Structure formats: C-alpha cells, structure tokens
Amino acid sequence: MTTPRQTPEPENEPRARGETDGPPTGDAAPAPTGTHTLGLVYPPAGAGGDYTGMQLAFIGGVAESAAGYDHDLLLSPANRAADASFRRMVDDGRVDGVIVMEIRLEDDRVEYLVRRRFPFVTIGRNSRAEETSWVDLDFAALARGCVYHLADLGHRRIAFVNRSEQLFDSGYGFARLGLEGYTKAMAEQVLTPRAYLCGDDVAAGETVLERILLDDPATTSLVTMNEAALEGLYRGLTRHGRSVPRDFSVVGVAAGRWAEQVNPQLTAAEIPAKEMSRTAVDLMMRRLTSPGSSPRHVLLKPLISLRESTGPCRPVPGSEPETEFPDIPDFPDSDF
Image (cartoon, rainbow, N blue to C red):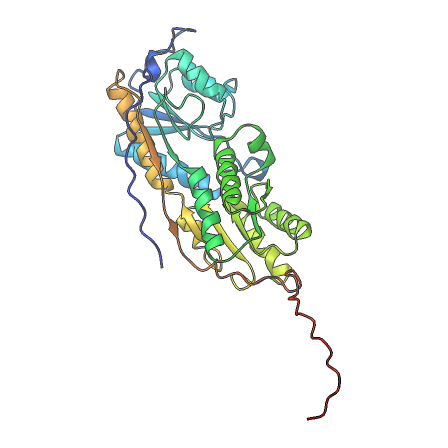
C-alpha cells in the first residue's frame, strides 16, 4: 500500500531582502545577455567522481524543465567557487542564471553569487536561507518519521546510515539535517542512537552493515539516507542470514524509482527529484523575469510510502533477557 504524498505549498515570504539586494560588495557579474542557457552547479557524489543514480535523475529533471522554457542546460561539477568551470559559467556570462546543488551550511559558491549579484536559486538551503530562493525537503522531519515508523513496529535497536564522511564534514545540509532528525526521534523514544557515515556505493554499504552488527548484533532495523549504498546494505544482511523484513527492517529516504528496484522494495519517504527540479527551474525563471521580487521558499514534506522492507520486530535470539520465574518453595511430605 502506498500512501499519498502531501502537496507542497510555498512558505510565507521572508522578511529578509531579496538575494539581489544584498550589500554592494565585490564587482557585479556581467548582466545575462539572453543566452537561453541555465547553469547547474552539481558536484558528483559517487565513488570515483561519478554521479549517483539520484544525481542523474536531478540532472535530467532540470534539463527537461529548462527545455520547457526554451533554455539549454550547462553543467558544472564545481564544489567550490574557485573551480574553473564555476568561474567560467558566472564570470564569462555563459548562462542567464545558476541553480546550485549539494549545498553546504556555509557555501562559498552561494557567497560568490551573492557578491556578484548573479541570478541564482538553490536546491537545498544553508545559512543564507532567508535571502535566497530555494526548494528543499524537510530532511529532519523525514528521518524522524522513519524512526517513528520503526518504533511503532516494535523496533528498539535502530541504526542510522548517513552519507559519506567527506560530505558530512563539508557541512552538507542533507546529511546534517538527517542526523538531527534521527537523533531527536531516538531521544523522544528513549532509545540509544547509533549513527554511521557511509560512502555512496555498494561496497561501502556492505562495510557499514558489518560495523552495525559488530557494534550491536541485536540490531533489528535501520534508517538510511544513502540510497547509493542500499544494495550493499541488503547484501550484508543476506550474508549474515538476516531476511528483510522477517528478521530486519529497513526504511529510508529515496526516490521511488530506486526504492522499487531493490528486493524487497524499500519502504521510504520518497525524494521527488522531478518535482524538485521543475520547482527550481520555475523559481529560476521567476528570478530572471522579476529580478526585484522577494525570494521564495518551497519546503516539500513527502509522506512515507509503505512497501515490503519493514515489518514487526522479531528480537534476535539471545538478545532479550530470559524470563525469570519465581522460586517454588519446597513443601514437606504429607499424607493425603
């Protein structure tokens, strides 16, 4: 059974000034010259510098939506404002506006665009959230909802599989907010949190599953925000003789396409990549056609779609304390 997804609504307009009305620090970038091209700044997150399946879905979604406005798409893998591809895109005026992804809490790409007064929006949000237009998911609420779903099924040993150490240490908003939501939910349920960083690939998923069961063999469930490692998590469970969902439940935050490709299909709060891509392009075109308008914020809160990877908790044999029976006193022999 799949629950319907809540329809997103834009948040109230912020009190802060528009992103193009910031302090006049630095030189303004060349005014867009009608290139009919949008820029997408999106560093790859996969092993070996590859784009993950989720990232490719976003790239395709942005390109498709841009085409609907008769715009082409120029992709930059820049992770920092100093990267050459980012500077060429902005300083040379190759695009009319920029969509920035893989946002960090403190992101010098965003700061550079603000200083240059270059039109941009973000997929994700950071410390300048009030000043810029963005679309994002409520990752903290989604992780919290995943914990509550497992707790309602009786699970008490719930691990959390996050994104890579590199992304987390860089201040990546997705990873930080997800951990915040998980930790809060575990505290509310009076449970012990155990969170793990994991690379974005199958091998890393297998490795982190080994660590989870080594740290606590009685673990019966996990929440993951790393769909690239999902297949590896499943493989690791199979190798340890844990059947999903009979012996172990898995719930995550993932796009419906990938949630349905694993076996058993993943119960997940779905990432609506196409919807987020379309919204980002709509916000970008609004910035271009109405440069003096206030920034707009769209926070999506998808519901959890119930599939086949979660079920009632079955404690690992030997992990629960044995029931103690009261001693029965000895009675003296008696004649009846």
